[in-house]
Amino acid sequence: MKNKVLVTGGAGFIGSHVADELVAAGRDVIVLDDLSGGFRENVNPKARFVKGSVADAKLVNAIFKRYKIEHVYHLAAYAAEGLSHFIRRFNYENNLLGSINLINASVNHGVKCFVFTSSIAVYGRNQLPMREDLTPSPEDPYGISKLAVEQDLEAAHRMFGLDYVVFRPHNVYGERQNIGDRYRNVLGIFMNEIMQGHKLTVFGDGRQTRSFSYIKDVAPLIAKAPSVKKAYNQVFNIGADKPYTVNALAKVICREMGVKPELAHLPARNEVVHAYADHSKVERVFKYKARYDLPEGVARMAAWARKAGSRRSGAFSGIEVKKNMPPSWAAVAR
Image 1 (cartoon, rainbow, N blue to C red):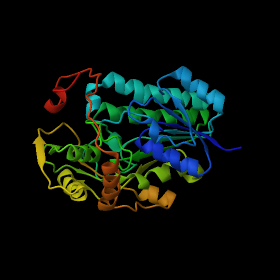
Image 2 (cartoon, rainbow, N blue to C red):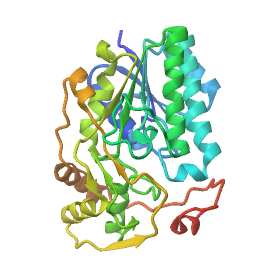
Image 3 (cartoon, one colour):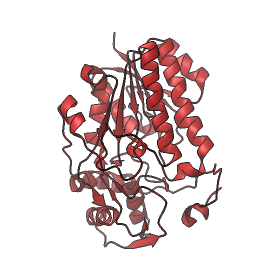
Image 4 (cartoon, rainbow, N blue to C red):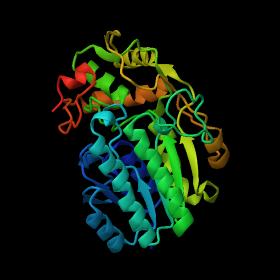
């Protein structure tokens, strides 16, 4: 009998790639996704698809009862750090309380390993390089919700023996990214703007730095986590090592998309300016080092984006707080 695994957010970007890895490894994959940020065509045809939200506790419990889930890969989240200030209730209901529904069900149904994708947003600012032994200090509700889930998993392990592995990926990009989302995923935003004939919108002077991580350096490690016993009940940074400025990123993308860089600088957002992580722990435990540099990863994503075409950028329809929103967001807030 195949090992039954649940992938939440399996119609989304990272989740669909993780599901592909699991299907290829011979797992019986159940995908749970409400399609709020993902697409049905992203779901591996060999996986069973259930449309719904992790915030629906009744549905979550029914899935665990029906399929006898052994491993959980929890990737469902609305991962927009900057926007999370203005959608606080939505953020906590989906990213925190939805996670608790899964943890409760995992304990009640004897799940063997719970794999959670957190974020380097838990570190906050001025902790460089970001290492797992640093004290987290998140700056936004998104990072706060991710840290709370990490802490709850630790508590659930102590109380109930639920084994877990936490990954903190950062600035992941690649094929199937939702390039129509105006609030997150800068590579997708830039490529979408290029295909629509617009200038690239950059918040601030563009000198802020990030380590942009190609999906093929992230998804395989997440998928194999339950088979690496040394990783149990630990936290790992995962992704690329070399940081780039947003300005440098724009040049790489424009080169691959065959256009001249034209930037439109907007007022700076209140965000972490520099973010890059240390990966020595994941390299030691998983025996893996990131293999794809930014030009190669961007070339692969650009080829996919040109084939897929641009997507219309919609506005988030549930803004709860408009005070201090970036003007370009406030203009379309609903």
